[in-house]
Length: 369
Length: 118
Image (cartoon, one colour):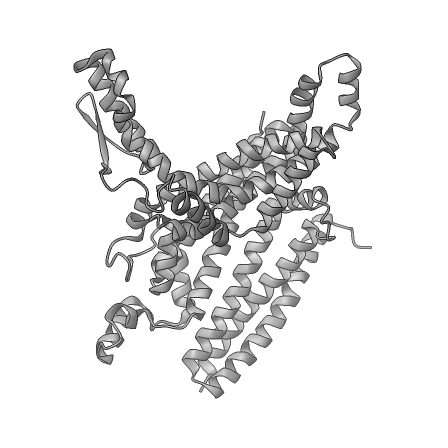
């Protein structure tokens, strides 16, 4: 059981993290060259107009007044309005549109890394110094060493250009239209913004409707047609997810191997074997759970890397997520959008780490001490 | 003989850590603002020096809370990957406390000096 005190302490630590991020973002944006008023009005705008806009935006106030106002607004989750990218739109609305895209990418990237990295690490540890172990270790080292801006174009070149198996960019085929709601028993419900989940919901709705009111069980014969948009969405996701997952997978497998090697030398594993327990049960039941504790910690830390990686992945694969938005906002000196995006990234990262802390304190209650 | 109060001692140690760094920050921040004001203009001096102080302050806060949140995990990670660099959560928190104290000092120094700038 995870104690409430432990969770409360972790939640309290989120406050200085977010305060620190907000402060650093404020400082960097004020040290960067460029006048936001000039950016909004354009380089040829009359100086008088620029001066007036500076006054309206409060940019003529002393910097500590601006800092105080920025902190007060941020505390109320008011990031203001976008100057350039989505002129006049509240930053929250812009972020709400793009955030699910990045979250979807990061979650699938993480799942890929976990599903491949952990079994590979266990296998490598159990078969220490065998050919499997060597191949896995070399693979892991390569995965850690290759940056996303290189592996992204490489997988694009191989799987999209040379082999032609998967699409090069975008979130879904151009023949499909992404709805923003779905209808259940006459009620309009909002969709998640995550293309794989949304298309699955919509396609399933159409499929079930066809079974109930149309073709009946004959609909199963054309199952792939009903799920065409979902299949397209998954095909579009595969390469970005693979690119994003490779690095994380490599690190997890290396961590898992090291942790598992340590655990399988423990006395309780020897005792389990001495009792006559099968090797598979000994490894999976006694070894895996204990070896997972440090790996779970790394999964949390890795989520931040995945979010950072999403910035590059989205740019390489032309996916309109929060990462691509951040790159565009920095290029256009859109201060409020940059501030909002970075703070949301920080919030996501800290919340995921809170989840990880709770998970590993559940796995090993001693950690709460 | 004065009675030893552990809470007071705990507080004093931390206060000394922040206050010494803060005092250095006030002096350096003030000097930097004056020098930049002489070379450039007072508004730029105030803005740039304060922003640098904010950067140090924010980075310190972020580093401190990051160390408190994930420091033990990073120690464990280094140990398991055999990349131990003698980095510890405690040392990191101390360093970050000094850094944020220095940043806050610079910010305060700029606020004090700005009305006096030519």
